[in-house]
Image (cartoon, rainbow, N blue to C red; front, side, top):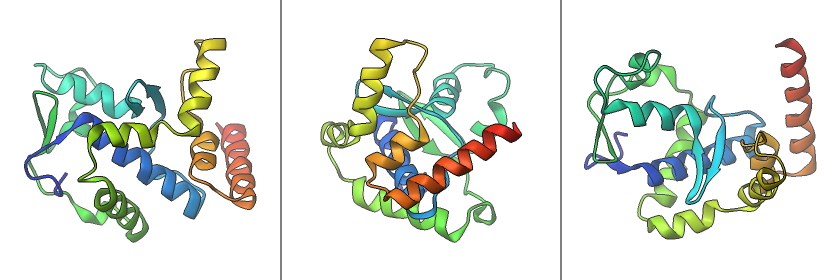
Length: 168
């Protein structure tokens, strides 16, 4: 948020987060953002973050979002940072992937960014949801494949997901 002192539109932020997530999956085999992405018309949207931001303008804020929204203000579908982040909670690799996505997409026209994020993961989702409306989230595997993760990385991510699911 500090990279956008004049605020950032939802679609711009969500696209940047999606591309950062994709890059992180391809490079490190794990998620950067602990959130599920769903495909909407203008591209993938992180579900928890989207819901939190939708409630940000309401008073009182829905239960469970207050901590997340600390330091964030929303005015007319633009998001502003109202506090400086504690960078001790972000790793160097997290910062590099986020900074790379911001640098690459900060000046991209929102419609062009939407076209870019409507990638193979988004198309797979749109096909899946037509068949079964309960399959409404992009999978980590879909996102990694859309980012051109190699077979070894996809296998690594799959194994991690199998273990994670078995332990939950």
